[in-house]
Image 1 (cartoon, helix red, strand yellow):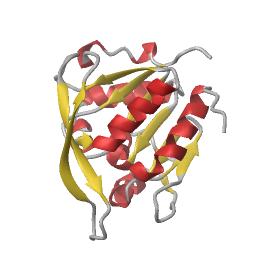
Image 2: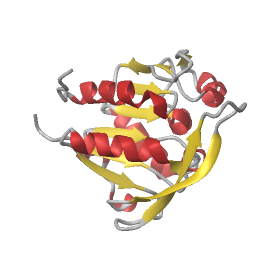
Image 3: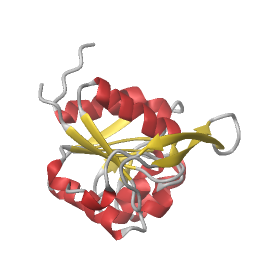
Image 4: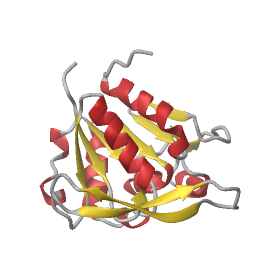
Length: 195
């Protein structure tokens, strides 16, 4: 299997597990992952947030780690990548305001390249206008945005462990769904995983 080039869009207060774990899983599978953030260059970092489900009406939030940026955002050429990962957390709420971020997402969608988005990452997909008529899921608080953007909402079980695949798009509700979410993304990339 040839290594694939994956682009991951992050920003300050990206969800810690939703950036760190997919990054490590994709490296483990033999792929090259570039992490980028508007306004940041390779060698810099973004702060992460840890969101947890502790029985409250919404998730709790704690400061996480520093997550390394490995490539320059301004130099991103979507055509050079085989897939896109959009983690959740707090960063999607402002990344979706960046026109270049939205253009990159549209380029991946137009080229029918695999896109994996999780939790609040779907805010970026909705803002980019790439979910109309598509089956997807997200953290429940994002459901109204997806519906307004024309997506077909798919319920997942209470543990957030199910991923939803619609052609080149694989979405999940939150980090407990990583195993299935990443497995489905790797399948879209053509990566063989022995089970």
